[in-house]
Image (tube, rainbow, N blue to C red; front, side):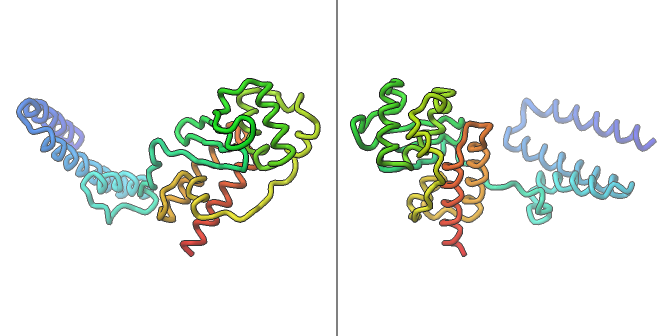
Length: 237
């Protein structure tokens, strides 16, 4: 009997909404739908809890409180985390090159800062010119060599098998851990100065996923991202 009554109420509600749609103010209609949906979820959560499914009941009821705008009643685990910033990029530079990672697509771009190809994009250089840049970095800028590693892996798969032996040896050295300024840390994480602790942690998590070896990342870039997080979180400590 209860099921039939509930079904009749649902049918009547749907009929009323459809009948009112053409004349209702969209914003007002959206508000009504949120209140109705929130009430239904709260009721469903109460029924589930009464039947012994307290965990599922809390989850459903939490959705109802969110629809109703009762933010203070949402369990902490249901609160959304900080939203990633659309179009954010990370910049990491050495004396010779600057690499830019797009957070949305994971695309990696680079610009030459010094040397014979200063001012040119890496995408505009052919393989012979890139090899010349690699040799220059191997001789004078080991950090630049490490920055070029993930770019080379994506553009020229298998490049390290034919790379100059000296450059390859320098490439595999342990990353240096020089001091990092707050400005550099913000650029690496793709954040604006003054970003909060939650934003810093969210940016770090997003980048570490992009820098996973299966995604074409590198140990050096991951090290720099970890260092940037530590520098900025120390400021909040």
